Amino acid sequence: MRKLLTAALIFSVLAFSGCQKETTGVKPVEKNATQSKSPSQGVKAYDFTFTDVNGKTHHLSDYRGKVVIVQFFGTYCPPCRAEIPVLNQIYKDYKGKVVVIGLSVDYTGAPPEKLKPFVKEMGISYPVGPATEKAWDEYAGRITGLDSIPQTYIIDKNGYIRYYEVGFTPSYEKLFREAVDGLLKEG
Image (cartoon, rainbow, N blue to C red; front, side, top):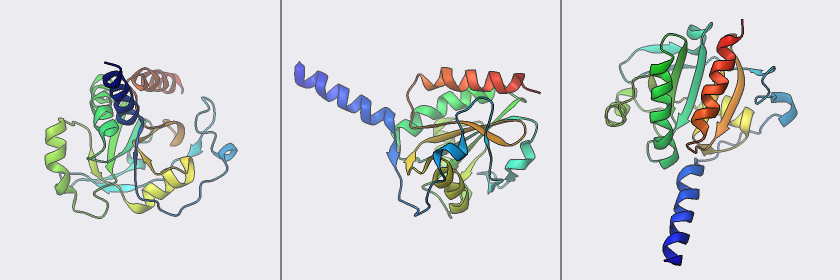
């Protein structure tokens, strides 16, 4: 019984912490320069462009005036897969006020339609496409300095990263909703 409990604990820690991605060689900015987790300050979000699985091109700046959640994920990553239903529900619950964007790091440079089976399997209703190396570098490299996924960024209506999380545990849903609610109340 003790071995079973130990194995379950180890699995839980690994399953909900994060997955590693190949290193990019980008050095992070000084932690005090980003202030990404501050509720009153942020760092300007890089205005990336991506093509979703349906062939539509999106620019982050298209969503100015809305709160945007950007998730960098891998299709092979258990914590990423666990986070997707949470983001899908947030997208549905805040329809029209909050945009969720999924960027796959394991399909970087691949045609976006290669992600279609994964999007269908997961029942994702928000825009999903491959991340560009530049977008990954600007977020993971500059903000967190980590190569773990998922990395989830919450961007305010003016295009500033205000919150981020690396990895995923079910308790993050409450944190994401509190952050979104706070940002929606801002002018």
